[in-house]
Image (tube, rainbow, N blue to C red; front, side, top):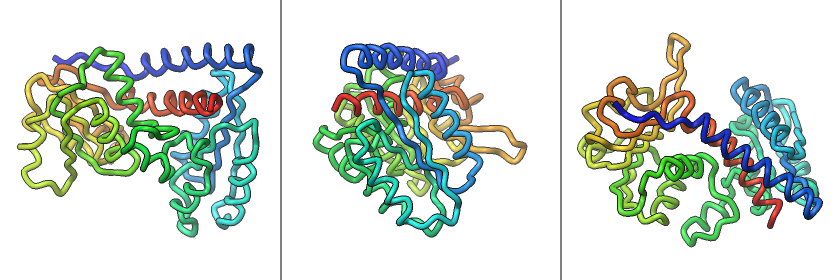
Length: 280
């Protein structure tokens, strides 16, 4: 049976370390890391996530500001808030919670954020600079995945690594970050032909396609490290990842659970990016 990678514990360890560094920064330089979150509309999942971010900021000793706007808000109002926050020296990180209502172009909104304050790592400047290795901030979920691998002492260099998923939030930036760490990368997706032939080559397999339990036991190499990024709500109300955990855990050497694996790391790395932004 696989060793279960405990994302809850690792994320708490990271958050404790961030709290100590934030306290030191306040004492030595008088700087309190500040994060502003903009939430448009009443998406229930976003509400929960924003609340968790607020609690995490409070626990870390950060300044937290929140802007809640109705679903019919126009882009100009959001831009006005972002431009003010870009100039606000007490705010080091700006996060626009996705998804946005249909009348708002998310790309335009993300591009309005100062790249130095783009602690989500979604700005084209930061995504583009992943290729040269000098982005201000890397995307939080991919950063969290690397942190989990590092803290469990899992070697990345030279490893045959397969990512199932090509989103701008996880799959693509993660590929660049792993490539920088000298992994050999293959990116697949739900339309890849003979997917199992590719996934069975992986020494590190990362599932981030948003398709419940699509990775079965017969698609996984013996003793592979399996990272499940997916979080899907099933018809019975239960949560499931992109990996069939009960099958795959019998073959993998390490595996992340859902929930409690990658998910908690996203907020931890958001705090890390905000702390780093305060130092820029």
